[in-house]
Structures are given as C-alpha cells and as structure tokens.
Length: 74
Image (tube, rainbow, N blue to C red):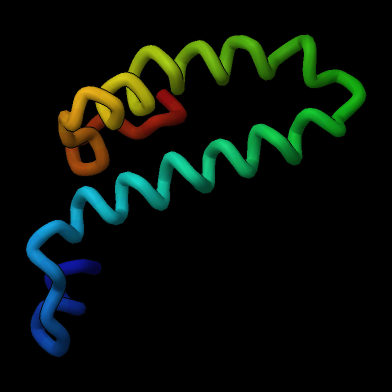
C-alpha cells in the first residue's frame, strides 16, 4: 500500500516513526475503550502485557517494529 502511495506523494523522512507513534496512540485509545467491557479482566491484561513487552517497548527504545513482519496480534 505504501509503495503505491509513494508513487504519487512524498512521505516525510520519518514516516515510519510517525506511523508507529500513531499505532501506539491508537492502541492506548483502544485499551481505554475496552475498559468498559464487563469481561475485560479476563483477556485485557494478556493483551496489554504483550503490547508492553513488544511494540510499546520497541517504541520507547526507538526501535522500529511496524514493518518487522510480526503482526501485533500474534
């Protein structure tokens, strides 16, 4: 998808960092939404732990993760 976009529009040099920041912000917003589910205690801690130990940790350490080939849901 990005390859097609790049053919028509320029991307900023730090587009990966921006996309990863958007991903992190989106996940935090989604977690906040999920807190309203009655059964969130059953599955949310696992999801948060996985995000914190992989994607969020990489983001804080300024390591790229978005195009690593491992989907966040695996």
